Image (tube, rainbow, N blue to C red; front, side, top):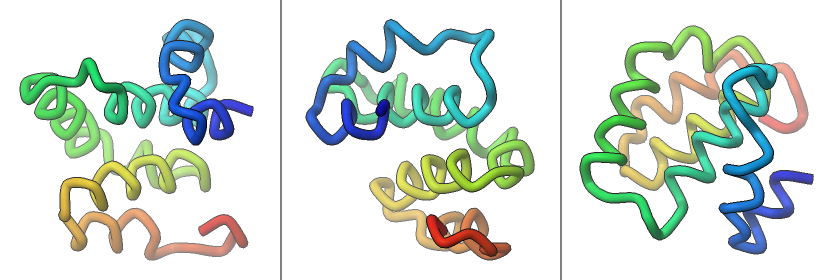
Length: 94
């Protein structure tokens, strides 16, 4: 459902409904929505990338988290990290 909101560019819905107590896959979706939102500034993008870099193994633990992280890295043209996120694929979503 939240991926559909992101596709419709309804980032505020995602950002308002997912909080820090949500499961990790939803936190990754929230991070992706935060990245794509028009309110993202350069400092916000740097914070998001720093969080991804610091917690790469956390984002590689499940399919949806790694896809969201890979999408952010893809937008930043960091293809090496995209491949790191998607390397251990075993799910059709990957």
